[in-house]
Structure formats: C-alpha cells, structure tokens
Length: 219
Image 1 (cartoon, rainbow, N blue to C red):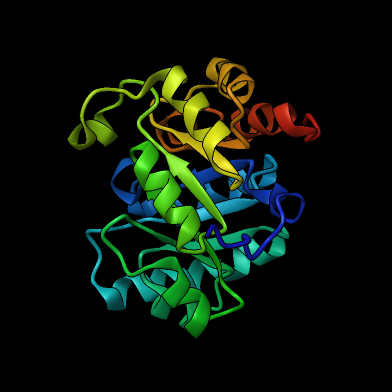
Image 2: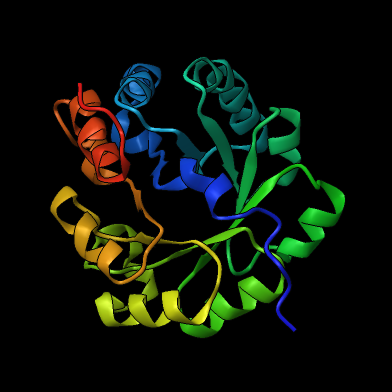
C-alpha cells in the first residue's frame, strides 16, 4: 500500500526551482555571494550537496549559510545527512537511493522534509512507498554531473514517472531555462538545477527567470 506523502504538493511550492550547490564549481571565495544572488533572484530552496567535505566542514558551511537562507525566507536542505540537517536547523534532507529509507528519517526527525534521488521508475515508486515527500528524477538530459547514471532518461521516462507516482517530481540533469516548460508539460512539479544557474554571469537575473515559470516576480 502506498503511504500518504507527509506534505501536500501545495505546501511544497518552494521546491519548484530546487537549486543544488557545487562549491568546486562556484569557488570558495564567491560561494556565499553567489548563493545570496540566487536568493535575491527568488530561489526558495537550496540543497547543500558537498560530498567532498568532511562532516565537520559540511556542518560548518551549513551553519554559515542557514542565516542567509532564512533572511530570504527560503529553505535549506542537506544532502544525505539528517544529523547535520538537524544540527544546522535545516528544513530538510535529500537522500540517495543508497541512503536509509525516508520512513526512518520521518520517524526520527518528523519535522524534516525528505526528498529522494531516483533514476528509474521502480526507484520512484519505491521512494513513494517509503514515505518520501518528493523525488528528483534524473538524468533527463545529457549532463556530465550525472554521467554515472547512464544514458539520459528523456522526457518520455519523465512523463511515465510523473504519471505513476503521486509525489512531486523534480526533473534533474541537464536542465536549462528553455527546457523548463517541456519538463512541466510532462507533469514535473518543478526542476532541480546546478550548472545553468551557477555558471551564469548574472546569477540573480537568471534565477529570477527560472522562478518566473512558477509565478515568481521579475527583477
């Protein structure tokens, strides 16, 4: 039996542009400034995904970034580490398919919003039965960051997933501004973005252009 998602889709509107950090891409010296530009552009969810950092350094960065996220009424997610999410007073945790089950996190930390990365229809269905609040599905398009997960899934697979689960599905992998609408046409709740925003010369403006797809204000 499929469990009912902990959060309703309406309450998760802040996820519609789900920005994932990449410290190596952004650079240490401009990291906080780049994050603030994205928040100024209307981004309302930031996932801190820094697998190369030690737990201590990840917590330190999370504690540094949390006040900034709060200032802009945004949400902070920590990749894979619910313990660090709790210590940093983050809003959620994002699990991989190899992590503990979402239900375990929900039982121990009921206030956390729980996302799960998925890469197949079976994975998406499993995440739903295990109590995830939302999922990312990837890679939709060709992208170096998701090369380990094989060939791009494509829009047909995205549509199959969105029609098979009741959870909000965020399209991830090779997302660019002009691809947002076609992902939404396949039933995606929103998009998860890395390089297209962080590589922009005008992060604030580019972030605003993303959020305008979901009723955000232009700047």
